[in-house]
Image (cartoon, rainbow, N blue to C red; front, side, top):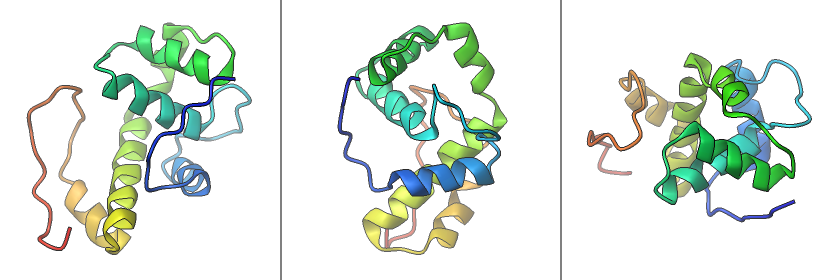
Length: 127
C-alpha cells in the first residue's frame, strides 16, 4: 500500500465520526474508507489534478486496489460536500484552538465546492 502522510489537523476517528454524521458512510467499506477518500482528494487537488480519473488513481495508490471513476462518481454527492465542509471546519478549529460549532456556522454558507473556484471564505479574526 502506498503510504503518503498528509499534514492534516484532524485524525481518522474524527473523520470516521463526521462521515457517519453526514451519512457519507452508511456501512463499512473495505475498499474506500473516509480517511482514504480525504487523503486521496487532498493529494489529488494539491498536485494540481482535478478529475475523477486522477482521484481514482490516487485511491488505487493508497489502497493497492483498482477503483473506477464511475464507481467513484457514485460516491460523490451532497453527503460528500457536507462531509468536506465539516472536515474543513474541524481541521481549522483544531489548528487554531477555536470551537467547532463556531466554524460550522461560518461554513454553512458554502452551497457547493468547485475545485479551482476563486471564492474566499471570510473567517473570524481569531481564526
